[in-house]
Image (cartoon, rainbow, N blue to C red; front, side, top):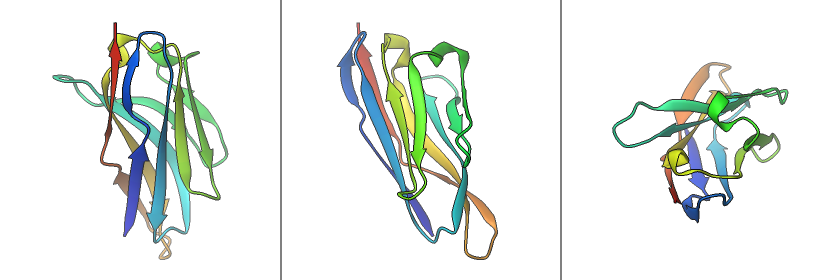
Length: 120
């Protein structure tokens, strides 16, 4: 079994910064892509940023230039540095990981979510 534990959410003013962290633990052989998603009230969950095991990244257009995703493959941790935050960034942020277990099967795991609130 694998657990993803997120931290770093909170309340911040317009234009402020937050860093989210998500640490994976358990029966992990390796981790492929790691992602951050978010879900605002009344809206569908959307992909915010992705990072591959090799470090390639991709972002949704609305966060490009403001958010940076990174990972530490030794610590099995993914980060999301969020700068110049806007009220429309308010959402519950979830990390997601494609984990390869010791059987070499790949499984999809989600964190519990962390609330980010940006006040105007």
